[in-house]
Image: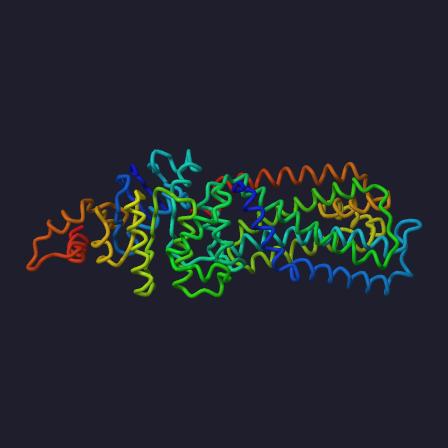
Length: 237
Length: 251
C-alpha cells in the first residue's frame, strides 16, 4: 500500500497509508472504530476505490490488474451477509464459479470439514445460526485457495468453540504459506497470532512493528500486553 | 465454468427456485385479464379487421408480461443483494463490469421470456391464434426483454431501498405498459393521445410483437424495431458506464 488516501467529501477516512505486508506473514491491522481499517480492506478488495495512492496484491494492482489481484485475495467481510435463496453447498459452488473454478467439490468438502460445516452442507443459509453463517463466510473466502486471506473482525459475536476452531484453521493456513491479514478489536487474539502489527488512528499508521517489539517498547509498571501498548499509542497520537 | 456463466446460472436459479411466485403469479394475472376482458368486451370491440378482440389482446398481454417480468428480475435481484449486503460476493470476484451486466440482463430476459411463453400457452386455450411472422415476434420479445432487463439493472443500481424500486415499477413501468396499446389500438385514440403514445417506448415493443401474430400493426415494424434497438443500445451504454464506475455499488 503506497500513500493510500480515501476521502468522502470533506471527511478523510485514510490520510496516506503506506505499508507492506510480507508474503507468508500473519499481520494485524488494529485501531479504534473509525480508524480506517475496513476502508483500507475495502480498497485492497476492490470494494472501494482509493482517492489517491496505490495498492497491489502480490504485485497485481487492485485497479489496473483487478482480476489477478482478486484471484489472490480471499476476504471474510465483517458483516454477516448471506444469500437466502441458496444452501451452503450451492453458496460455495457459486463462489468457486465466480473465480472460474469448476468441479471444486473435493476442496469445498475439505473446507467445510475444517469449519465443521459438513452436516449443514444442504441446509438453506437462512436456517443457520449466526456462528454457522460466519463459518460459511470464512469458507467462501477460501474456495479459490487464495494466497492472501483478509479477515475483517472474524470473531465478532462468535462463541468460544468456533473461535478456537477458526484460529486453529487459520494458523494451519498460515503455516501452509498463506498470508493472513487480520483486523480485530480483541487485542489478545492479535497478540497471540500476529507476527507484525500496524496500528491505525484517524486514517494514519501510528505504529508498525513486530508484536514483540511493540510489547517491548512499552515501559510500564507491569509486563505489558497489547492492550497497554494500544491504549498508550492511541492516547499519544 | 467461467465467472460470467456462474453468475448467469445463479441468477437463473434464483428466480426458478421460486417459480411459483416469479412465473406462476404473472401467468395467472395475465389469464385473469384475458378471461375478464374477453367476457366483458370480446363481443363489442373490433380492433383489426377480422381479428376478434381476445386474439388481439393475447399478444399484447404476452409482451406486457415479458417486459414487466424482465424488469422485475434484475431490479429485485440487485436491490435485494444491495440491501442484504450479499452483493459483496460478486464484487469480490474477478468479474468485469461487462460480465456482471450480461449475466443480470440475460437472466432477466430469460425470466421475461419464460413468463411470456407461459402466458401464451395458457391463453392459447381461449383463442385461435396464428403467428404469421414469428421472427418479428421473436425479435421484439428478445430485444424488449433485454431492454427491460437493462432498465431493471439501472433501477437496481440507483435505488437504495425496496420502496424506490416499487415506485419505479408502479409509477413508470406499469403506466407505460398499460398505456402502450396492450388493451387497445392507438388508432382508436384521439390524435393528441396518439401522438403521446408515440413517445412511449413500450408502445413500439407491444405493437411490433403483435405484428408478428397478425401481420398488421399501428406502426411499421422495422421502424419500431429500430426504436427498440437504439433504446437498448443507449441504455446499455449508460448502464455499462455506471457499472464501470461502480456507481452506488463500489464506494
